Image (cartoon, rainbow, N blue to C red; front, side, top):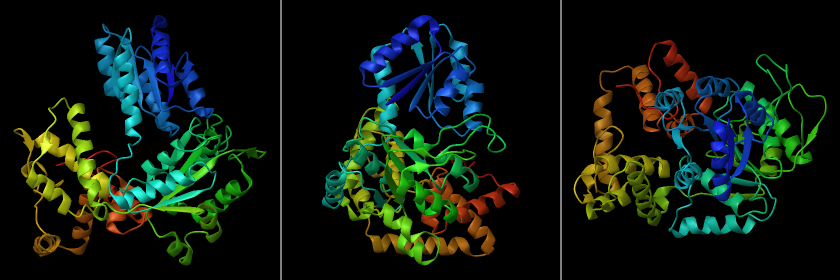
Length: 450
């Protein structure tokens, strides 16, 4: 856990930093917003930023957004700063911590951020064999390609490989190659010098240098442009990178992990992915089975999510009823673990009585889940879908399908593209078209407006 503390607050933030270090966090200090930006540009990075509430948190978040730095912000201040606390939350801070600091509250915030990065929960033998292989290869520096359907937990297993490696005390840096526009991805990976392009207001260290000594995860690498793949191949082979606008190569010492929800061998045959890069990445392949092929994990994960979201929402923890357990284990879960997590979060909020009954387990559109066989479920779904298409244009059906799928995925473009069976680029083009037509499009973490 890398914690960046910004401001002084009469030394009370120093006390907070000591508490954080006692909890295992690596702490860096900055006196003001500009100092914090220098830290983040330098490649030292942060998993969490705690900021004095008296500073311009809204401006800080705007600056982070303009320079494409993604890190959660927590505001800190004396308990009398109620208005400042409200303003900080409205500006985009994730939480407000009153000072003087409470050790348990600091620990809870650090724990929440760590938990957001993923817990490895499994019981099924199909998943256990993958975890065993991951732990076997983790101590090496070999590149690992992690494949599987969207939502199966590829980043979670990547973090587990890092935790079990000899680099566990060094940074774990992840970059989603599908979420960053092609013209910006090179700068995000390799960094840039001041003035290298419009908007390059200062030198920015890229993910390769930020991960130096540790592990770099290239998430959804199948979406990387072929031209950039050549530069990536050189970086992996020679362990040097060139910043955009730079004049000399920069050596890096990293371990590469990559994920893909596509068949990269097929992408090679179609000319969309370099074969030599695939060979470099695929020294070891960890193929995660979909949730429907690991039934023993369904109830284990459901119980974990129930506990987590019950605590997060201040609600009593309930067990699943027999009917609810049957419904969960017979559902196909096309969205895998991510879909199960969203479903259990809803169930915690909707449940009444001493148990979570089947009536509380609902799909994103509000329809109930049913404890019935796959064939019966598929037939009923097909009939309902067919009836809904009659009298509508193909364009209208396509638009609603794309937007409903995006809504189901809470705005996650990569997940939605996988379910739809289209590339992330095709999805982006469609969404840009709908936005131009005035149709509301949910952003990441959002649902479609009613």
